Image 1: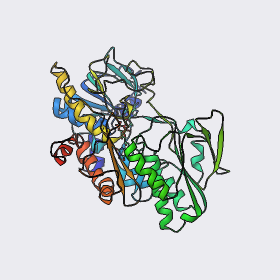
Image 2: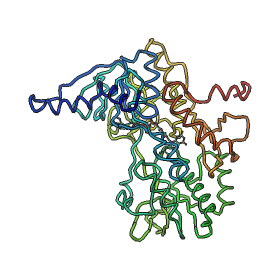
Image 3: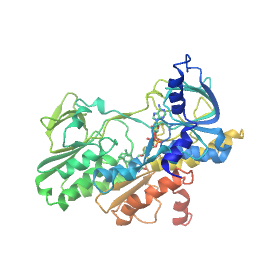
Image 4: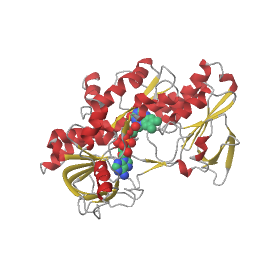
Length: 445
Ligand SMILES: Cc1cc2nc3c(=O)[nH]c(=O)nc-3n(C[C@H](O)[C@H](O)[C@H](O)COP(=O)(O)OP(=O)(O)OC[C@H]3O[C@@H](n4cnc5c(N)ncnc54)[C@H](O)[C@@H]3O)c2cc1C
């Protein structure tokens, strides 16, 4: 079935059709605020975690008992944007119509959630619908805050600045890299939680490789300014990255936080987080911005959130500590591990089991260990595959030293993982590499 046919089929159930219909009807009638619906399992957000859980819930309770609320027409495989920003993949290859990935028969409510009321087991959407549920899975991702950097997002209208974190700006990174002539190439890491904490520096290694390939490296000073006190959070991989940084003459400044961009002068202003009030201006020929990030507005201040606004969860069962019929997955949660699609995969298997047990009035019995992974792309054909758990301990799948740069891992990142995502994770068939790790380590891990 074609994508457009699919879209039509799925949106028959969607809020957005109701909106179109209602706006026509409102010429003749009064209000649409009374629109109500009930569903057994309601999923908020149709990103990586939301679609994976919709597929798993469909198998558990039947498609007709599952609905997913998601406003976007397109779904993107974000991890490939690292390679899009470096010109190694096309942006088109990263997206598919949402209609084509919502599991067939599952209701897609094409709308935004504006209110969550766990005391009445209901949510409200921006098209006036109230949806009640028996079980709620929150998978709303996180919010990008370019606007928290003075001069952004307007500065993106100028050349020489890009950001792999947004569909709107990822191709600007590649353009800035191609147009690089001479000067500083600067890469930032914000003072906030981020998704894929490796991505801000992966694009630096790729840029270095590109400038070498095109004979411009000697004209470039490459600078990584990070808010963090470390290059990477896990020592084993940080040690390997420091070696690369030294060998390739890359400059790393810790505790440097981007606070302003002046595109006319091609200047970026960083504050020194260890010396309050002290700022430093860097001229740039190319600037890659990783924006500050935070929880979705709809969660902030809701009864489901912790003090910082993230979805509050039991870190082992992924169940809400106050509302036992509420669960969560992915970037919107306060799980103390790195926010990645790999983490979503591992969480989806545990959450599936937790919900099964709760539905049967049993206690959850499977524990999420914080597994997450970051393929640290270090050139156009090498990757260090970081995998670790809640304790910051490496949890490697393969029986070899994964802190070494390897070509095979690059192929996994660039060619295998997208397939695993579209055909495994989103279909609820991939719960992370745990079983393979056990197999490859002969049952020892
Ligand atoms: C540049 C980049 C590189 C990355 N590299 C990697 C990598 O190498 N490996 C890796 O594992 N991960 C990587 N990631 C991270 C990975 O993409 C995310 O961690 C993952 O997609 C999180 O899934 P999620 O479901 O929590 O959020 P998302 O997939 O972002 O989905 C959230 C969904 O919620 C929807 N939503 C938001 N607000 C509302 C609302 N009010 N109502 C309804 N719906 C709403 C959004 O439209 C979105 O579809 C990378 C990300 C980026 C940007």
